[in-house]
Length: 120
Image 1 (spheres, helix red, strand yellow):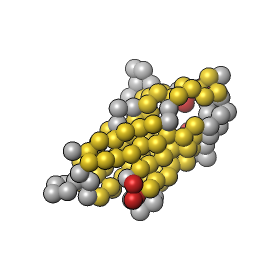
Image 2: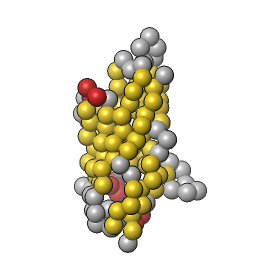
Image 3: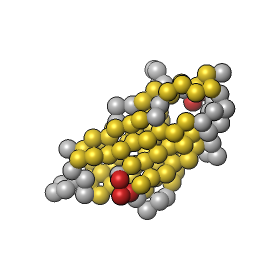
Image 4: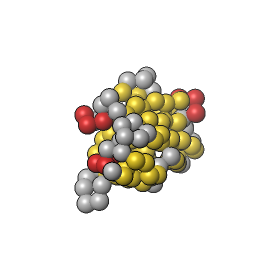
């Protein structure tokens, strides 16, 4: 069993910065990909940023240059540094991970989500 626990959400003013953290725990053999998605009410969940275990990253176009994803493989943790926040960045942010567990194959896991609100 694998759990993802997010932290760092909250309220920030437009133009401000915020950092999200997500730690994976449980029966982990290796972490293939970790990252972040976000979802607004009534809309589909969308990719924000992903990072592979090798350090390759992928960003959604609207956050490039403003958000930075980083990770600590040894701690199975991923971070999302969000700068120059805009009101349209207000969403619930979900941690995502593709993890290979001990004695089994790889599976996708999701955190419970953390609310990020940007005030104008």
